[in-house]
Length: 98
Image 1 (cartoon, one colour):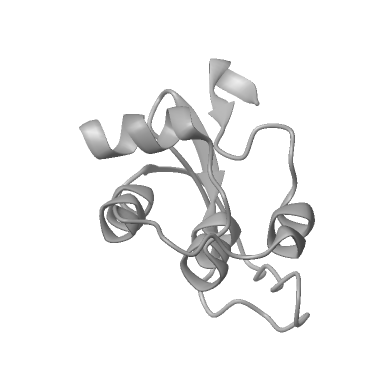
Image 2 (image 1 turned 120 degrees about the vertical axis):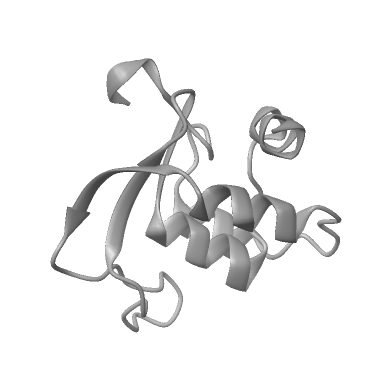
């Protein structure tokens, strides 16, 4: 990613992560979602991303976020919230520590 930031899902992509199935227990899930939604907006687009399983449009507008270390977008927040996709352990520790 640009600006020296890392992606939260590493070399995986959303389709792979959602296909792997949900993680059953994410104790800090609400803390992580709050952190993801509080990132600095880097970019916005007029369109909406699609749910990778259903193909339906995600309700939120597409936004790209950063915290200066990591980079993510609205689609990642949606899929993490809905499907409990696996995020990198380094990111989870980073978000919870903030």
